[in-house]
Length: 177
Image 1: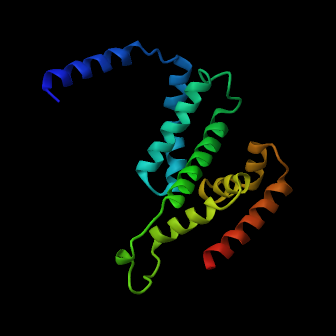
Image 2: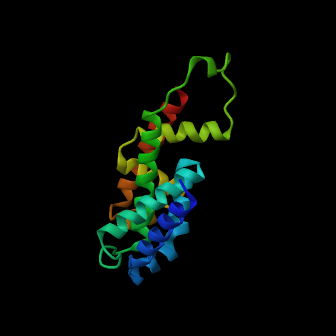
Image 3: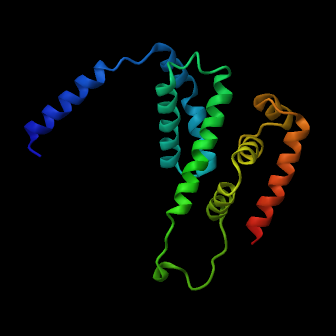
């Protein structure tokens, strides 16, 4: 592309960008919670690029829904849950698109390092139903206690404990296989 065409395209894009009015409430929510959404997504995906994609997806969905304030009762809880669900969607998509050429496979299985273990856990979590995956991520990746999770999700403490227990058993079974 000629430099003059490139500059014209860039100038028109910048002019369009200035024309988009970002509501102040959305801007406040974005500034306050972007790092929380990114960290949550990074803990699940284990990849900064995927975590940034998740962050963009979460905030784009929020922006399209409204200006932010009237949609969210508890902003932090909503955005954390949205990040967990979007990150699990990324893992599921990555898992379904996964192909490996036979020549690239190692002759002997290598010992699993933490990166491989994180990927295995991500793949196993992708097999879970959304609610157990969300509760597991809140409990073990985000570090919330069972009572905090029960309050956040509006379910009983017993229900949280049962889901955590069953999810741990299911993940243990899938990871040992």
